[in-house]
Each structure stands twice: as C-alpha cells, then as structure tokens.
Length: 474
Image 1: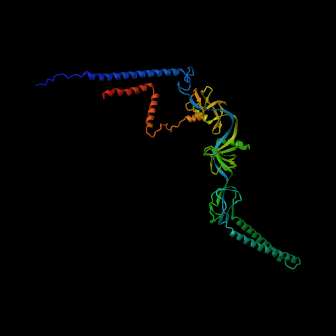
Image 2: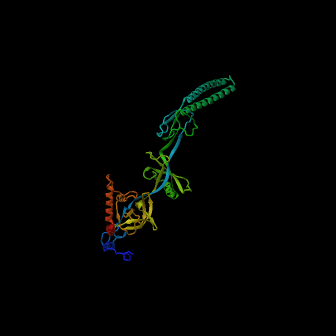
Image 3: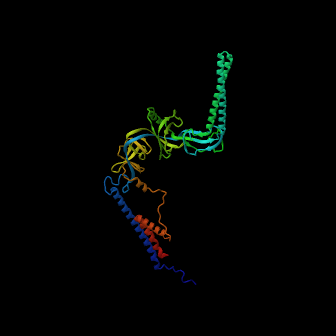
C-alpha cells in the first residue's frame, strides 16, 4: 500500500517566518542609504569650506593676500627667530690650532754622586730660581775641601821660604859672594812653588764647588713635577730622569699653525713693528684661557699641510695655560670699521651662492644674496647685499621660500615649543584600584570621536547599530 502522504507537495513555509528576512533587508538598505547621504553631505560641506578658505586670507578677509603667500589657505605662519644686522667694528681674526709649550723645561739633576739625604720640595709646587730642592751627603766633599785647604797652606809656606832665600841670594850676588847660577836656581824654585800654590788654590775652589753641589737648587722658576728619586738612594750625575722636572709657565708660549694664504697679512704687520694680539681658547672654544701677543713665525712653510707655524707668548699670570694643552688660537690682524655684522647662523648657501633670508615689516620673507667678509666664529661681516637694521632669519629657515609670510617669535618660546621626538606622550595615570586605565581609555576614545569627521562618526554609529539589528536572529 502506498503512503497517502507520498506524491503530495511539501508544504510552503508559514507566512510567519517570512517577515523577519524582509525586515532585515529593508534595514540594511536603509542603513546604506543613510551612509551614502551622510558621505555626500560631508563632502559637500567640506568642499564649501575649502572654497571659502581659498577666497579668504589667514585673517578671514578676501583679497590678494588671501591665504598668505606662505602656503595653502588656513595654514599657520611659519615661526622664525630673527636678528637685526648691526653696524659696528669687526675684528679680522685668523683662527688656528696649537699646543701650549713651556718657555723652558729643565731637568734637575745631581751634579755630584752620593746618597740623597733630603728632598725639600713638594710635588707640583711653584719654585723660584735658587731654591734648595734636595741635599746630598756633604761629608766626603767637606773632607776633600779640608784636604785641599791643608795642601794649599803647606805649599804657600814653602813658597814664602823660597822667596826669602831668593832675596838673600841676590844680596850675596851683589857682594860677589856666590855665583850667578845659584841665584838662577833659586829663582826657578820660587816660580815652581808659585805654580804649586796656584794648583792648590784651584783644588780648594773645586772642592768647595763640589761641596756646594751637595745642595741641589732650582735652576729656573716654574712648576716642579713629580719626584723621580726618593731619599736614601744613591744619585749620580749620569741619571737620565734626574731628581725632578721644572717647567717654566710664567710666561708660557703657544705654538700654532695658520694656512699659508694668511701669512702675508701677518708678515705685513710684523715687519711694520706692530704687535698682534693673540687669544687662547679651550678645545670647545667656550672659555678664554689667556691673552698674549705674537712673537714670531717659522722660517719655512710645511709643504705637506700647507701651513706655517707661529709662536705667541702669554704672561699666564693665572696659570690657566698648561704645558702641552690643546688650544684654539685667534690672532687679530686688522679691524674693519663700521661693518655690517650678522650672526653666522643667518648664513645660507645654495645654487645662487651665499644668501640670507630677510623679513620686512609685513613679515614677508625675501632672499638676499650677500658677500661675506671676515668672521670671529659666532658673527661675520657682510661686505655687500645687506644694510644695517634689516632683520635676518637665524632659526627656522628650513622651509622658507621667497614671499612667504612668517611669524617672528622669541628664541626661548621657540625652544620650548619644540618637543624632542624621543619624549613619550603623557598618558593617563593608573589609579591603584585599576579603574584609571579604563576611564582614560574611554576619555581617549571620546576625544578621538569628537575630533573625527562627521562621516566617520556616522560610519561608527552604523556599525554599532548593525549587530543590534541582527540580535533577534540569534
């Protein structure tokens, strides 16, 4: 028997199951229409704002200056730091590199051999010529002096007796009592004793000198170095290191070099008998160590480096210059009167040559090609292309162009506005209860939503409503 249910068509879905699907489709279509409408409105609104901004300047007024020459409409002016070109005397300075050289280096050595009894100096102290620095055992030298003095006394007595005999012989010769030969022999004996006495006198002087050498004195004034020998050691005249080293630092010299192209200007002044002032600066050219004057130049140019050596002398009363110290040297060879002077930071170089950015009263930038003169490291003279009183850009010239409008700011304010790239952004504080991070995240999200374009907010709203529409299906 066949099943009565076979052959009959499947029942169609109940009408109650169809409305939810049609409802979802209509909802999606409505959301799509809303998104398209919102995007079109956003594009039209911002296009209108851009058109208005292009027709108006930075201050909102329309005209030739609309938008400012510095860039697109609505953009802020570039902040720059300016300096005013001044008129003043400018020194013509030659820069060189050199080392401090003592006027004299003297190694204090023992001039007699013997045990070192005392060291009377303190390492590193300033000593004067003639100061006693050390003592050697004087007893052997005192004994040698006494012996030489005794020998001299004996020979002087013999000489005196020979002279008395000489007078007697001459008296007898006048009486024809003795022969002439005896008188001549006595005369020769007197001369012999005179020679012996002179030799003894020399021995006494030498012994006294050797005794004086047992006190080692400073040959020059200066700073004494580290002690090379301790008391109790036997010192000899052949010792290489000696007792200590004395360096004369007042005055002191500086040996430095300048390019050979600058030599004629130096020789011109030296040959005229003028004294050229010289300044010595530290390695970073921050602190001035002393002032002196140029003494002389070397007699030849170093062909390897193309430089010539110069020697300057400094009083060094404060002792700031130290032997073998590296220094930067500035030699003033001339002075430009009433020159236009600007900071070195204002100098720019490009295809048109050397130029500066000037800012006029309307805060507009202009490129001016200049001819530079001598400088002193931080400032330079301008021989042409710039007049005193003009303002030049010294900071913020990276993106400047001809005709841009800029905003002049205080250097301290500009430095405070620049945030280092390595500095992390400030984040919300985490409270001990652990709720701080969540609240800060919500605040950040709210701020991001407020700053986002309106179209983006609508998209997020639409995305948030989509899961809610699907909720009945789950």
